[in-house]
Image 1: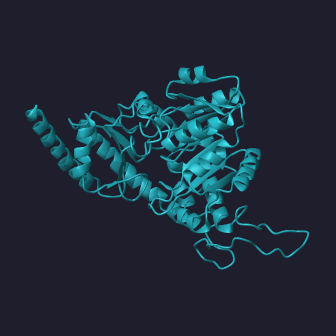
Image 2: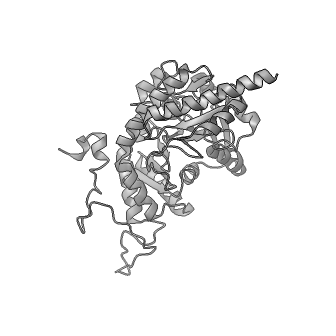
Length: 395
């Protein structure tokens, strides 16, 4: 059987870098060399300087390209390094249409950096295709999609956006961090550049910072490689190896985390102290059917909203199992406060305009037993109820 016919979970383990051809090692060698000896004055070898190419980084780039169904992959020093370098495909005078509740780091890059170089932008609710159409200008050269979005888990129709892009010869970027190629293949839906914070689910262990990009078009790949080499924000070999190791267990980790996320989302949706749960795995999610049609699962990230920030504070004070931290996609469950963590770069006015309230919390579900997490949430929510009663009696 050809490796092309393997199932996704088998491809995670059995690819062109399964065995080191020199030694037979079943782990990709970590090559720390910063420079490489050249044996001929007129003909240089494949590697010369590690910024331009490193065997360990290249292995990761090959693996992610295969998993995403692309022709070429690129590994960067962080997710934002991948996104920022990919944005350098644009030029002064170009215009981007972008998801409104995009990750705060992307928002900061677009609003504070790209604008200085004459690249315009329009934020839209990409679940409304009429809004997307209305945002298109004569100089629109790119669409930037984050689906499901961070932190409101809105789902964008990737095929529809890419069709708009093709009509005007624009490119489509898709941030695939939340779902990974395990559940979503944007290139197969027409996207041009897929982006990942590999810090999250791909590496999965809260021990590396990394970013990845994949393209399908070879010419676009040449342009992005030139930018990667010029900008220089490349991933080091040790970190590349850590991501490669994490990818091997992606299927079992994400499958378990998603199963738990569905159970926890259903519990929270029924709890009287939770105002709203944002998770495309719930049937009442506005884009539930769209998510099912373009992805193999809803993922392991959800957000939920309390009555007010005070209730959220009491919950966080009393919950015991999850880590309260920036980031997501790890073996441990992580609770994050978007208003002051992932989306701190947005002003409160901009956050509220997008529905990102100070009473919203994001949960990345890890590998703990979901019943333990639900029991932990239950006792913390009971404390919230008690505190609210005391406050009401004080009034």
